[in-house]
Length: 144
Image 1: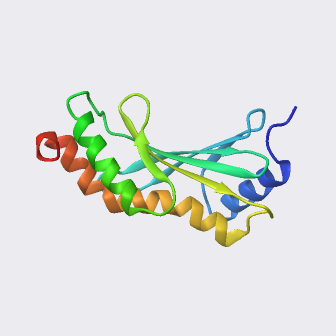
Image 2 (image 1 turned 180 degrees about the vertical axis):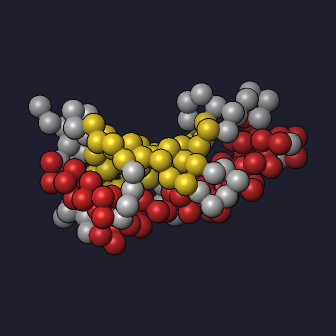
C-alpha cells in the first residue's frame, strides 16, 4: 500500500529535476534524498523530503559533531532561533547533527513557488544562523 501521493512525488521530482537538484527517490518509502551546498561555513546540508498524502516534510541536516559538552548551550541557541522563525524549527538530529524540519501541508497540489520556497527556506536559515551555531560549537560556555 502506498503511503504517499504519486501526484505529489511526480510534482516534486519534476520540480527538483528542472531546478537542477541532484537527488535520489526511494519509491517504496516516498523519500527523496538530496545534498545542498550552503554558502556558509557549514558547507553542505543533507536534505530528506518525506512525501505523504496531504503534506510533505523536509529535514535539512548538517553534521557538526555536536558533543554532550556542547548540547546544553546548543539547546539554548536552538530555542532562541525557534522563537525567531515563523515556519519550521531547528532540532537535534542523530549522530551529532543538527537539523531544520519544515512541514508543508496542502489541500491542492503545491505549485512551483511553494516548492521553491519550502526547499530553499531550510538552506537559507542554516546559512543565516551558521555563525551562531558554529560559535556555540567552538565555545559552548559563552551561550550556556
